[in-house]
Image (cartoon, rainbow, N blue to C red; front, side, top):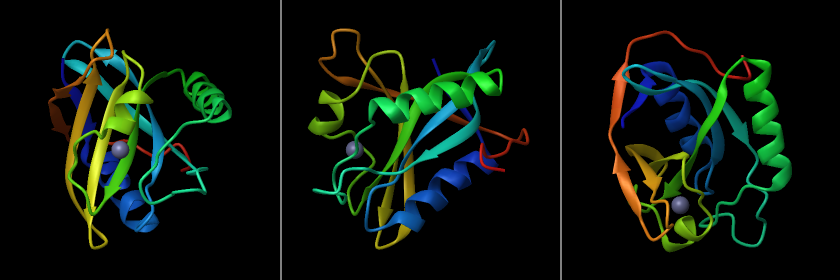
Length: 149
Ligand SMILES: [Zn+2]
């Protein structure tokens, strides 16, 4: 399994992470299953609603979830995953991330160091939810746009 992410959307995720620094950004990834893998076709940026600790906590509310599913359906796409940033932390899932993740989805994490986006990785939670496995990310050239555009 690989995650296909075109250059435009890759940059949008990084830009969102830089814009919300030093807070975490988060959003949904809309796309579809293709012959070569799971492909992200649009992003649906979300507001990080955790005001207790917005620097290091990322959570998706039921309202976010429904809004993301609706946005996907409107575009004829599926909700295939979620992205968020790790300000001044490596692009690896935290224990908190694992506890709040679901199997099936792709979880993209972008590290943002001192305001500059760095590594971008993707992960899948194992079915028994015991741990994440890395999911390779392949860059594609195909044009894509934001859900907001
Ligand atoms: Zn995280």
